[in-house]
Amino acid sequence: MASGAFENLPGAGRPLNFGQGDALAGDNWIGFRVLQNGGMLPEWLELAREIERDLTRLEQIDAEHAALCAAASVPGEAAAYAGLIARARASYEDLARSLRKRQERFNHEAPGIRSERPAIWIEYHLGRLDGRLKDATARQPTDSGST
Image (tube, rainbow, N blue to C red; front, side, top):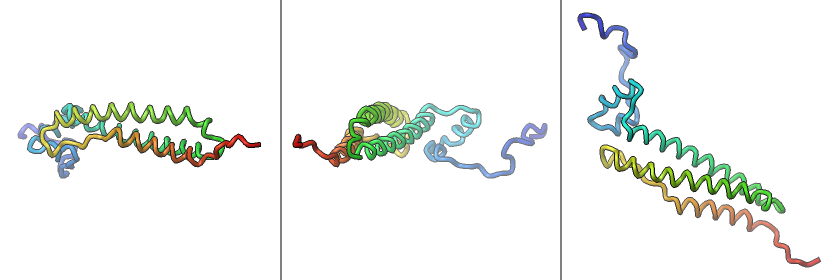
């Protein structure tokens, strides 16, 4: 300090900003903060970021799927949207399975049970997407074959 090495540091004189990662790190928060300020994070905190990005992307795919199903519910449009809906469902399933693996790895590597995250229930969400499609196509008029 006498040589002035601690003068004009970024954030000098301001209170520390505690983020979610700091709370999850428990007693090790200062060490993780130093790593973070240096552009490095423990692997489990980087996994947490990836999980959040995946959850956001799943919400986007879910919204796209809902919009496609709504468009397919218009009489005569179901066939036109079938491929797009199938691709959206497949994208959702692929990302959800990848997310589940990340969540399990995060829960294994996180420093304590308070840090763990609930894993996504893939089958429930796929069933929800399938139900949405079923509801949309149920509104389609049936061709009775009469003329």
